[in-house]
Length: 119
View 1 (spheres, rainbow, N blue to C red):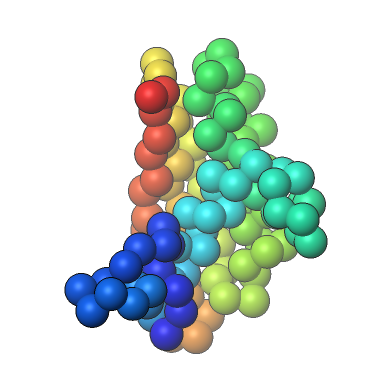
View 2 (view 1 turned 90 degrees about the vertical axis):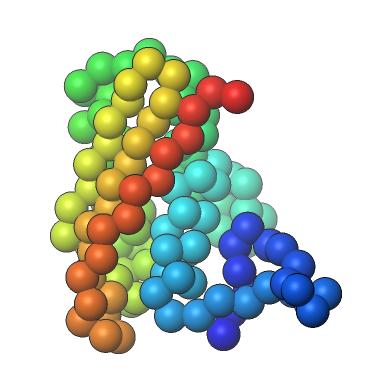
């Protein structure tokens, strides 16, 4: 069991915990929405997608983001998952990322969608 993300308190007043597939999903979400240079001992960690919500949309930008996300996930989570496909869609004031992967421990394929918009 690992600490749940985002960090929360469970019904017993303890730090909420999660395990298995949910923990891997949490790790992917952390990578996607952490800005590079945000982590002291891992300055290269993070795709910085929150900042991209405010950038102009284009097919070139989406392709660059797909490459950034795919290579970063392989670098930082490659021991846990095999990334099969990354799809980034920017629509008006929102950004949607679909990550298809296989969990190495179980061989279980998964597809997760992450979305953020301007607040």
